[in-house]
Image (cartoon, rainbow, N blue to C red; front, side):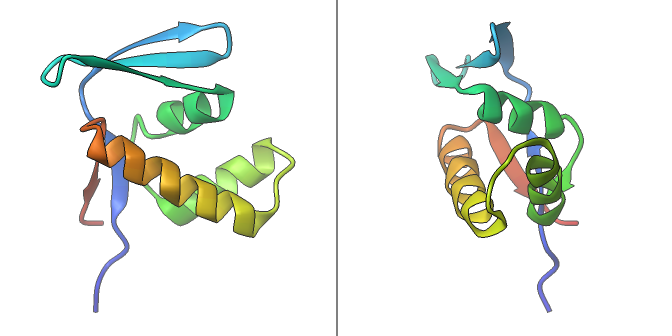
Length: 91
């Protein structure tokens, strides 16, 4: 039986700009910008969090359909993983 992984952000440079956030992956040498929702996700991932916990938090904070939130959050986390900004760890 597979445990649900928790996601956690890696140690990268970040800066808030208005409600958005800019992330810098020093190893890869590039910047990654997110919207205010992305910034909320980034802040939440300061501690390891399962995707279900993250979706619960986002649906409480934003007026969004739970299924839409799940799909968009999964896609966003995949992009962050590919960019080397977050990692999935065993729960």
